[in-house]
Image (tube, rainbow, N blue to C red; front, side):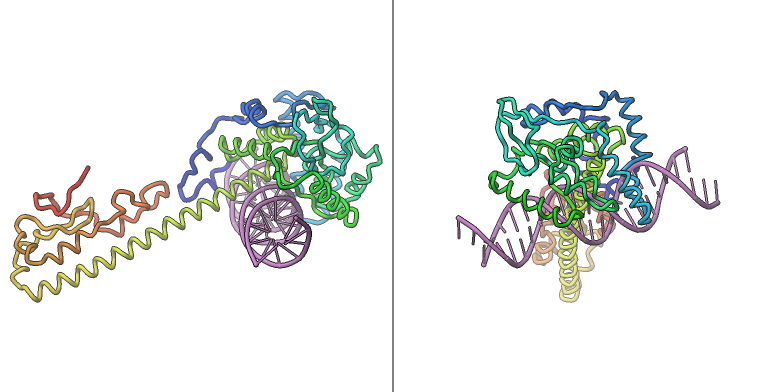
Length: 378
DNA sequence: CGGCCGCGCGGTATTACATCA
DNA sequence: CGTGATGTAATACCGCGCGGC
């Protein structure tokens, strides 16, 4: 992991990025599955079982072969080659467990028009839908002559999303908006499918299920960047492609940063307002003192230390030796005791690491006296 | 030292969904 | 209630820079 982009403003978003427990998300699978009717209870993986070492090897292999390369490809030729690679990879069943959704409740299938023939629920219902975000259609569908799959598979070889368009599988959509009924979703899915029939290059981008998002969120709380191993494990756990997991984390980091920037902007805005107000107050105070000087020359003959400023609350106060002056000029002292609300919660002093203290007097020859115009609770 | 590779980030396009008139 | 316009969030991609090898 790099440290380059880590919270340049020195802010922390709570859990994000604080934990360093490796593969913490691995511990969450059971938890998540139990609390959210996560659908994938069983996987019929055609490939061998994976040990961590195998995952690592697989990771290496994928990186040497992988879809990731295309993201950094600058030439069209290379992109085309990579797209072809990816397309061919979708036939590889190693990473393509057939998922059986065992949810008792029957959620709304998202893409009902995609074949449901392979879906088995524990109550015996044949139901569910395919999630185009999941496993490769070719594995189970192409030999069925499914026209949707045929349409999907007809993506241009140079389409950067060709493999993605073929990624789908059964899934539970229980968490999705309940405002959409089955017919709705089927209709929309059908619409999408027909769009693809017309234009095979249409990008297929469907939202992750709530379960998937929640799981990713939990993982993000554990660590906001992923090692290749973690990425692989997450992808397997959620039945997503590693690239999807990677992209999700990238976007999640971007969202975090954006939100933090907004918070910082608010902070700075308030600081600016506070300082403006303080500046105005000080100007006013200065004018009053000047007026006092001209109207009451004797006042200025008092010792210089009679007007001091409290370093903690930054109010001008009069000492016992200036009682007469204070009494004579109640306006001045009243004005200067205008409370600075930010003393107890200086917005710049917390997580931002920003400090406006340099804009304020740092040292005052101040000593609290009995005539201090206010009380400190500290 | 330069090239390659992997990765993160900023920017942006695209899509899905929500809200409102 | 249905529908189109609009806004927002989510997902995905591209290009670039950086650091390690």
